[in-house]
Length: 226
Image (cartoon, rainbow, N blue to C red):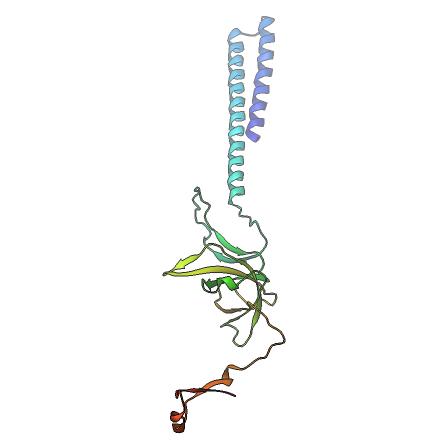
């Protein structure tokens, strides 16, 4: 803009000098050559002003282009959360393509997490949304965490000819003890019975028969409960 103001001032000065020279020529005091020289200076000053205006427009366009690039260089996460992983480094060029590159891995809220469980096809009929579950992780031995079945995939997952179905469980992680990527041993409660007789597994044993028992009809092993 300073160049534009200087060019405008030069044009004003040239136009004033041209008017004065023209007035002198009309009164037959000045020379025609001086008027032509004044007119030429006015034309040059007007051309310089037009050039300054064009330069200013180009400069503004460059500023707009740089501002656009700066705006595009600012990465804004669509969610509030915690950055778990960064896949780029400062100064790297991110190539644009049909598929947006993954720059960061963000977790919306670590206080609420999801646990993926691969359920065998033989057990998938027993698992339903809303069921309670418990699990343990090696990072906290002896501690059991609670979870709830949220969903169960309809599409199977085939791994080495083994068919499984992915169940998603919701987990309360308000204490921030669990971290993304941890492995867990999960137990899903598929049925709860009340007022039933419980018999410990250790109470069910089979004892080989004594030598005298060989004479009994049928022979073989006799079960013993106790």
